[in-house]
Structure formats: structure tokens, C-alpha cells
Image (cartoon, rainbow, N blue to C red; front, side, top):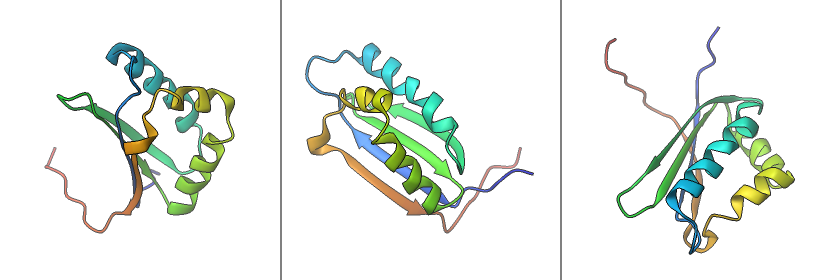
Amino acid sequence: MNEKATIVEMVLFKTNEGISQETAKKAITELNEFVSKQKGFISRKISISEDNQFLDIVYWTDLESAKTASEKAMENPKTLEIFKIMDEKDMVFKHFSIFNEFEKDQ
């Protein structure tokens, strides 16, 4: 049975000065190991813009699972180390409830 996503988590950020794009991509990808083991996780997509801004989108089954995963990430030494590359002053972190879903026919 496939669980359905009801929550989209969005993190929009740039990296701190001196962090190369390749270093950032590698570090952010390493978060997959942590995120994938969290209750309620569905999928994760990470994108980068032309001006080196990252967009991290995570789909969750429910808001409680998403919030619990965020709390656990803030207590995990490995994830905290990865978060150090992110410029927190302009970071946007939000949860959104999905109210409409449309996919192209396969």
C-alpha cells in the first residue's frame, strides 16, 4: 500500500560564504540517509537555481511526522554538522498542506 503525501516541507536557502556548490550538493544529499528513516517520509527532491539558491522539498504523510523529523534533526550531531553549510539568516522553512493534486497521465 502506498501512503499518500498530505504535507509538503519546503526549505529555501543559500549556503554560507566559501562553501562550493559541489560541497553543498554532497552534504545536502547526505541528509537522505536521515530523512528516509523518519516516520511518515514519502519522498525528497532538491533543486538549485542559477544564483545558487537551494530548494529542498520533502513530502510527508502528515504534519506531526514532518515536525517530529525536524525536531530529531535538530538533536542529531550528523545533521547539525550538515546544517552548518546553510546560511540561516535568509532561510525559509515551511510546511504546506496539499489541497490539490494533479499528475500527467502515465
